[in-house]
Amino acid sequence: MTELELRLSVIATARAMSQRGLSPGRSGNVSCRWAGGMLITPSGMSYDAIEPADIVTMTADGSSTGTRKPSSEWRFHLAAYAQRPDMQAIVHTHSMHATVLACAHRSIPAFHYMVAAAGGRDIPLVPYATFGTEALSRHVANGVSERNACLMANHGQIAMGATLSAALEMAADVEVLAEQYWKVLQLGPAHVLPDDEMDRVIERFKSYGQKAQG
Image 1: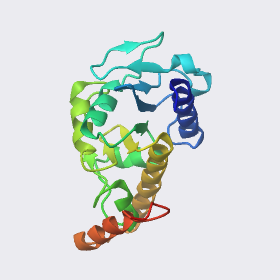
Image 2 (image 1 turned 30 degrees about the horizontal axis):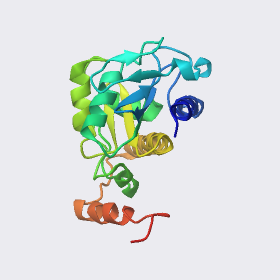
Image 3 (image 1 turned 90 degrees about the vertical axis):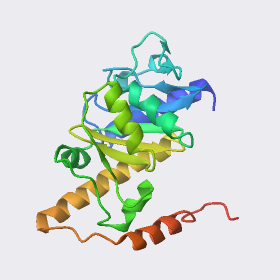
Image 4 (image 1 turned 30 degrees about the vertical axis):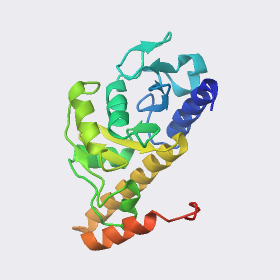
């Protein structure tokens, strides 16, 4: 994709994130890799008002170009990309149920086999740190080192994908699982699947769907 096409895709993803109720108001942010760094949504702008020129270009060392300030969370985007060279896009949201669990300091265990869609036996919770800080970026990098998503204590969730659409889908999946888990907890303790079963599910997901045949 050209740079303009990527900028338009970042905007479309951010708008879809908002329209789907995954992040209220101007919260959340979206980025994708570009030219050794990334393109990221600007700080504090309404997604409906963002134009391609408003998307900020950032290098891997944190410098930026353009007329807008980057999202205040740019540090953890860069840290996550450095940790996961296989991932190309990030969607960070304050979706309702993921945020509820994050504020209760609860990770999402294997109460349902679809938890494995995030790449492991659970969706972890990373510790709290002030938004936009280096400390938070370190926590997020650890959280996604072996997962495609994690919850951020007292904050929200972050999801990664090989494409912007995949990252958005991951964020939506995390929110659905968070809501389901929250509802299960209203009935009592969740019945968590054993590790060996989750390992089988993770292995089966590697060939799930319309993936190329070897």
